[in-house]
Amino acid sequence: MSMKFNFPSPDLQIGFALELKKFRSVYLQGALLETIQNLDVTEIDRQLAEYVCKDDLSTLAKFGLRGELLFPVPIVLRENPYLLGYYRLLLGYSQKEFYGRDKGFGVGHFKSMEVNGRIGKVAASDIEDLCLAFSAAASALLKGVGPLRVSRELLDDLTLLTVGPQFRGGANNARGAAGIIQVFEIIKEIVEHSVENLGENSMEVRSATGRLFAIEFAPDPDIIIKEEMSVGHDRNVVAIEVKSGTDVSNIHNRIGEAEKSHQKARKDGFTECWTVVNVNQLDMEKAKSESPSTDRFYSIANLSLRCGDEYEDFKRRIMSLTAIPAARN
Image (cartoon, rainbow, N blue to C red):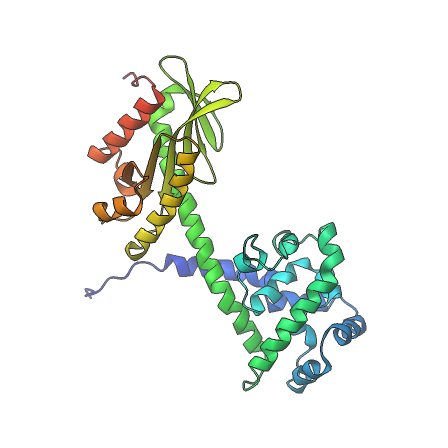
């Protein structure tokens, strides 16, 4: 039977499903219940009585729930530091807002617990205060969902509501990193006949006049090219921002982000700033108005063809700005 409509493969959801299976064993309710089995329940109850309001514990007990399903206590977090992620997710805090340096809650030193399962010295001395803060927030959550019947299923659903955006953000980050690597590989192919040193995140090429140029990944902008003037002194040449998102409706926000990066690059002395995008249709006039610091716009799709006017322009400029000779046939 022929199909009238054709939808793309749900690769993102397939990836989420596989990731969720691993995630449950570390951060979600099952991991908490497994941890509790290894602990002295009387000590958990003693700490719950110390850190949690009696009325809140009574409310949970009315529905047949133990307090640690909603309220963290030191003994639980010390036994399994990864479970800090469970309580963060349960209360709906994203990693960025919870641990962030600029707008976080001042608890960035606890991040290694969730990420690595490790309690640092500073975090170890603050766990009691962390539990008190969680207790106050969890109490507000319990009162706020009062009209609903509190259950293990509801609490599990609340953690999943936070996991979804986190997974999608991770997928977007992975897509972004893949785009940067793709552009880096294209550059490497262009200059490979002049490469002297090749590392995992950088390469060095020798110009026709013997000058050394470094091409490397950078946190901001994404890829940079700089010339070694003398030992310890470089001249910044090209700053490249790669925006790998395929959502056309959001491309102008990403170009605005590129502009901020390029403004910083200009202050750092970069003479050329390029922006590489991953959408088929781009209003060039609007893009130039949104990022006046961008000297050249390129498309990942067009560069990936390794032919055509856009690729040839990119190739010529890379070779010219690094002053490398043409490859010998």
